[in-house]
Length: 437
Ligand code: EPZ
Image (tube, rainbow, N blue to C red; front, side, top):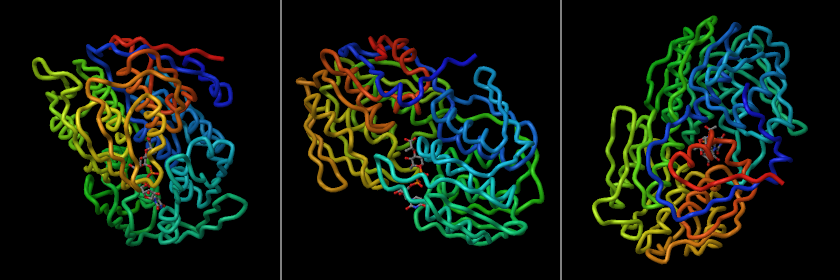
């Protein structure tokens, strides 16, 4: 039986406490990827039957998505990290505001529902802390596949008579969930669809493998041009979720920020090219194994000896925007100054003011932040507020590295994307605990 996660309103009051200044040591096992599990779960809507997804992380977001899918008539069952989803009885096609507002990625039901049922009515996700997050590219693509998209009363109502029809779709921006939504829709369309300037994140490769395993015909895996030859029907899947590269990157940075030494296991080093290059450029020793990454300092060196390194977030294989905040914390501990340029989301510096409460020195200039590292002075524990998933993980890393106690509020953001965070950090020697009010 899975542990109960308090609902958001209750979780509002939960706080995470961290007694910092302890180098993290040892190894930590990485869970399945949130951003792969979500699209692969919605892909089960494409084919009636019992699907098997393995290595699924138990997170607030995967649970919320299950609730959304249960509204359509889907049933599901967990057995440890194996999720059985039965999508035989799809009776409804509406995803309500109450659920979608808590998790934007619910928009990923659009493509599969329209392809399978010819109809989908989904609450517009609206903006979030990191940006406006429009879905115009998703809707533009569905219209190019022959659907009509009506927007009224905060809902998007998408309809198609008969099957979707293949077409050439060019993305202005390589949207990750946009690519995933149209890829799934195109698998059951009549004819061939070509997705140009498509996103290439590893999570999309995981989705392609699942769909091909269900009988879809897709060419161009891992490239920015995906070619989908539509088929009449698909069969249930049995697939494995890839490791979470963002979780792996977060723990690598946490180990470095505390002056520690360790190994992240059950991950794919080849999914983190940009981060590993930046960590090496900062002076850290990185050893890549088959499915693990070890990180350490050279003899006699510590956090304050870290070189300052600039980063610019980019679509994959560039530096991941979901690892920007965590790297900013690391650079605020180094010696000298670095520039962090955020090019994906227009409002992804919410963590800056909170890090400054912990004695960091960061100046925002438009879409860049200039970080002047504290070196030997380091960061100081303080009460801070989590604003979004990755910002909250940057505050956890700051708390682990800081002297004294850090108190983080609104930690439900963390539970959305980090499985068993307290257990894993404690396993690395951290002193961290949660208090519910
Ligand atoms: C995915 O979001 C991830 N979420 C995000 O991770 C991640 O930050 C993002 O990709 C970028 O890597 C999931 O996979 C569930 P986008 P997504 O569409 O697909 C603009 C986390 O922390 N855009 O690639 O929503 C958009 O505003 C989350 O785990 C449009 O203009 O991101 C942004 O500026 C946060 N119109 C850019 O494209 C559209 O229709 C990239 O967004 C769609 C996107």
